[in-house]
Picture 1 (cartoon, rainbow, N blue to C red):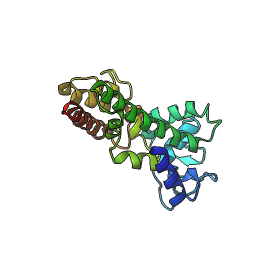
Picture 2 (picture 1 turned 180 degrees about the vertical axis):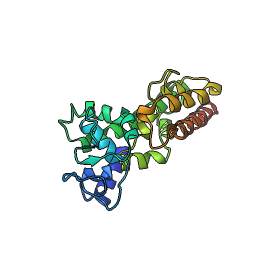
Picture 3 (picture 1 turned 135 degrees about the vertical axis):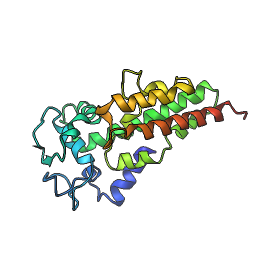
Amino acid sequence: MAALFVLLRLWSVGDGDIGSFVGAGDLLSSQSTLPLESGAGYDGQFYYRMASAPLDFDATSNGVTLDSEVRLQRIGYPVVTWLVTLGATIPVTFGLVMVNVLGFAAIAGVGAILARHHQRNPWWGLALASYYGFAFTIAKDLTEITEVFPPSPSGGCGTLVGARPESRRSISRGCCRRSPSSRGSSSCAGEPVVFRSRLRIDTVRSMFRAGP
């Protein structure tokens, strides 16, 4: 499903160029290999910059200029992409999209495991991945999908699946507060996504427990 969305977006508004997912703006980017839009662009251009060279802390790297040094803290998604692309030997523009698509599949997979655990059809797992914001995340090379299960001292957002309902709120807050490497543009950007996922898990579980 995510791969189909990527193809539709690629050919409908991306002119067949996967670099369009980065959302590079001509005010902050001069990377000749990326399609540039007018203005400051979107956050994906900074994740592209860091995924291309995670250890390059200069103000300008790979044709992208940082608008704030805080961007360098959000390294989780770029580092995963850098690893997947074998140190940026595979095009990073492709890697950014691939990581989000695989992450989306992993979320749906967790839902399928939940469904099997409750003796329901595994296709119910798609309900867990049906948060509409994930489409925007994939379309703009953003971090919300990789936010869902980052490690944290509180046990990680992945523990939401196995945690008791009354404890998931504190876990989601811990993920938001202690995982700056995967957060989006605000200091607690991960919390709404994780909290929606928590609510969706509760909803799906209630459907699984209901009679056929």
